[in-house]
Image (tube, rainbow, N blue to C red; front, side, top):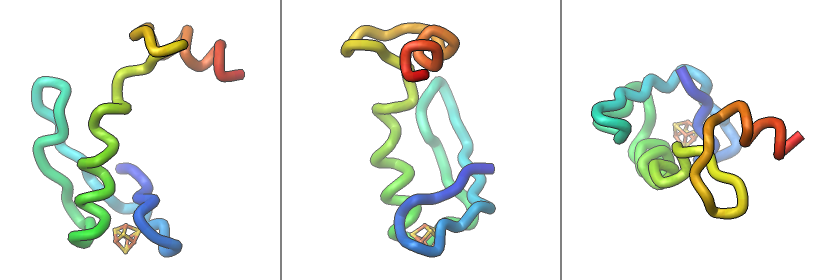
Length: 63
Ligand code: SF4
């Protein structure tokens, strides 16, 4: 489950189905929300200074 940030309602019951690291399908999102979530697909890989890294390193850097 993820929270959609497509509008002020912030629906928190959105299911996102991934396949090969890509968003294949969203469930429970309206059309706007589905488009918003699909638009986030390029941000699923953590990066630091525009270089891909692992999630732990990215979180440490962000903190
Ligand atoms: S799913 Fe639709 S209604 Fe819900 S937060 Fe996203 S844009 Fe808003």
